[in-house]
Image 1 (cartoon, helix red, strand yellow):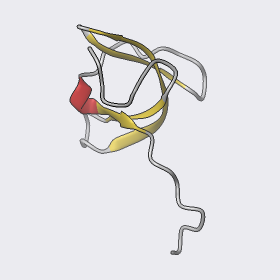
Image 2 (cartoon, rainbow, N blue to C red):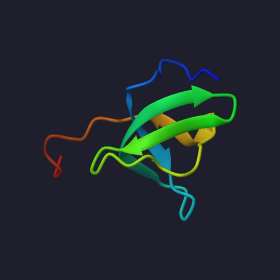
Image 3 (cartoon, rainbow, N blue to C red):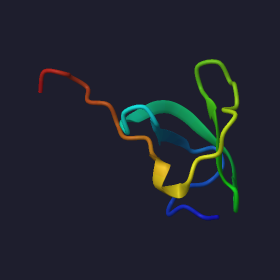
Length: 68
């Protein structure tokens, strides 16, 4: 499996199943036919599920100032 412009080690956001929003703070561990494996940057834990290519995207930049 390949994701456009993404590779192992890249910081990504994953789609939450609960509300379909995006959660940040993950890193790609592996790309395979079964899906994308990621780990949480906060504690280094690998998530127990694989994500489809539609549920992973490159991490977006945070705004410097939230009021703008």
